[in-house]
Amino acid sequence: MAANAPPPPPKKDLVADWQRLARVFIRPEDDDSRATLIKYMERILFGLHDFLKRHVGITEARSLRELSQNYMRTDISEEPEKKLADVIACLINETAPHAVNVASPYFVGHMTSAIPFFMVHLKTIVAALNQNVVKLETSKVVSVIEKQVIAKIHRLIYDFEEDFYLAHVQNTETTLGVFTEGGTTANLTALWVARNAKFAAKNEFSGIENQGIAAAYQAYGVDRCVILASRLVHYSLRKSAGILGIGNNNVIPVDTDKNHRIDINALEQTISRIRSESPKTCILAAVGIAGATETGTVDPLGPMADVCRRHNIHFHVDAAWGGPTLLSEKYKHLLAGIEKSDSVTIDGHKQFYMPMSCGMVYFRDPELLDVIEYHANYVNRRGSVDLGIKSLSGSREANSLILDSALKIMGSQGYALLIDHGIQTAAAFADEIKSRPDFELVTRPVLNILTYRYCPQKIQQALKRENQDRRCSLNSEINRVNRDLQRLQREAGYSFVSRTTLQGDPACGENLVVLRAVIMNPMTDMKILREILDEQQNIAARFCAPDLPAV
Ligand SMILES: *Cc1c(COP(=O)(O)O)cnc(C)c1O
Image (cartoon, rainbow, N blue to C red; front, side):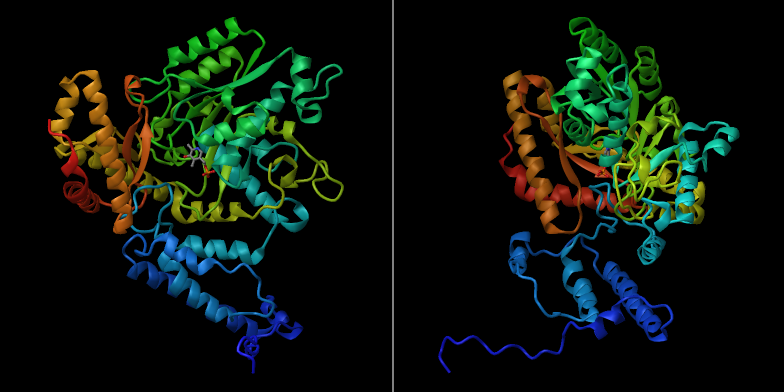
């Protein structure tokens, strides 16, 4: 045989043929497939359960660059490569250890965390039923269950009378809200609705959705639209402004007060300034945040709603994070005023503890969603309960089944326990940070998110007394230390706190690098949080702080 002849083809024990293919489709009449289903399900559930128990760190130490070397092949193998049992084993034993154990109570950096175990069962049901709620013909009762759970959350937000909900809960003409893929598409839907409502059909003009931006602006004598929000607004609002043709430069930042909440006078002034300086500018919407992604802060929703109503501006509340706080009797007052909004975004995969991914958007006016109505000949027929009629998504999974079941399993009281734990633990964590001379609390928690930084007391004091040049250079050093510290802690793999930047002293031209903690895992307690601070203190003392300037 020539030295460079291709190797003989591998022995084929795995082949793709009709007989085998038929076996992998679920056939309930067949007892064999039943046993097979159960066997694999057991392997998955117990395998992952054991993994989560064993795997206490956040992730294994191998670098992403090293791992990516295993994922270079780009051809699709013609014949099957692995049996299901091997694929499951491989996912559990080889992939999972290098994924991120977001369920770890030491993982306090992001809005993704442990979920109740029953969510895995519920997600399996959704996958097995494989309903498509875009249309009644592929979902039937699931669509009316979705309308019911939408009404439940609408009621949690807006709390209208019983009669209102009886009139709308199963009304095929009206819509109280829609499920989306996440907060981003929920925010996009809200602004899409606001835009279309503002540029509705009139006279010869048949509406912005129909004729586009240029015709709309001309019909209304407008040359620009703007959206008002604080600097802390989630970037999805800028993305939405881009997609909707408004332009993300036209998301205008409104000044915040020292607690990072929109300054209501600044909002009034911004509106007056725009109205007097550029009468052809349309103020499309204002966005209040209920749980800012970076700081967890809540804008003054009630006063914002009043200003918006007075000026005829759509008021959207981005409660992607904070929405479920409404389930807590103790803390729902933190979102007071949300009931005066025109629309509200809430994420299911955040504080409803649902698996990825689920968002929702709600509208005070059950007819407002009519402005994004679409029909097609084969689906979404007029007057039907086809949920795809007024929705950005087409085909869509039945996430409502998960939320509705979770609400039944947990009760509002169950969720309240989680919310209360997060808020109270974050407050205790803030006290702990303040008590440690090496750390500085940057934003105190309103909900369950806080930011802080490593900044030894001596430097904190120097920052107060030094001149501006020196202050800026010290801050710059501290920024570097916190950047390194966060990276080293993440790479060590025991715990995870995230990092972001907040607005710093404008004179320095550099933002403030801060560490960000999100407390949503009910297993995260003060003992763990103290350990996390200890670890940071040790890392800083060993690797980061030695080059700090003497003060
Ligand atoms: C998470 C978040 C979003 C974006 O939601 P996704 O589900 O990630 O698309 C928007 N706004 C706020 C306030 C958020 O916390």
